[in-house]
Length: 380
Image (tube, rainbow, N blue to C red; front, side):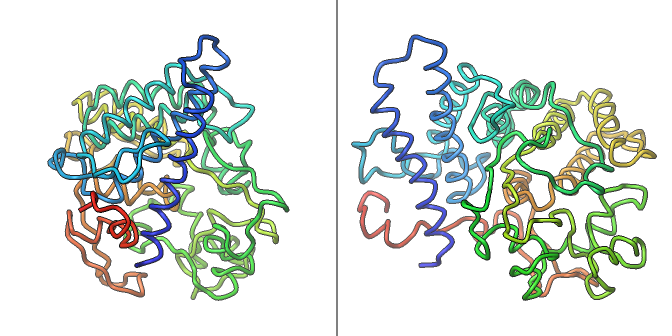
């Protein structure tokens, strides 16, 4: 079978299996002390996040497919050859796990390598967004970003992507000389300024030209992509030419041993979900105000007053989400829940491969690995 679908299935079920072993070994009885509850909350939260990704990879969007078959629910080390649970049943488990993690977890700014209260709340907001339960998106997204110091656009342009101690990172992994995977690393693929796949082989990760063209020139985030005409000094800094237009420098400045830290989620993700939830609840004045307050930190001349209808504001929030979270792993899941297709055939597209997939296309659903189907007769 195709290696990616094998990899994702094995990776997330390994997370679930490890979580179940820990829960079965150390938390057979519900913990009575706060310290132990915090420890359990991390493990349960991780399992909920794994199921969030699995059900979104291996089935269509939640809305309209609640009774479709999702993925097997494995909740004990003794569970094996489990059948596929319905999508709604998988979401019930996700919500239960992440709620436990929010209710019993702690804020751990000093250590961002674990699933703490904010991380669990952020994924709970993502899950409720997939379910279009907007009051709960509003509630939990706010827990995730409240009192987090967000960086402004100038920080991101001048100081780079950051490390695990960067104020707006909620969850990540501290990569060092021992833990770096070198050429097999994320930044080998993302950062065209070092000698990895992107830099040495020219397999650059570029923003789609149609999206780039929509970013106003006054928005500092436009400078995170190479444009030697508009921003010659940035192109010169990284030795990029006109042929490198659209190549990202958002993830530039990775150390030569590829030891840049991994960011799994930033506070800007739940913040934009929060604004989206206000739009969907028709709280347009509040949504417009919150959106303007945020985007002004990237574009001082921004105003949200032009977006007077719910539909217009919805489109603008989605646009801001695509721009802000570019390259951070959210678009696939956002497009899925928004019921959008992928169209990369517009004139002047930067895509080498011309793609045109309608919303809900089977291409958005990963196939369960053949080896799993062969091993588990209940997966049929």
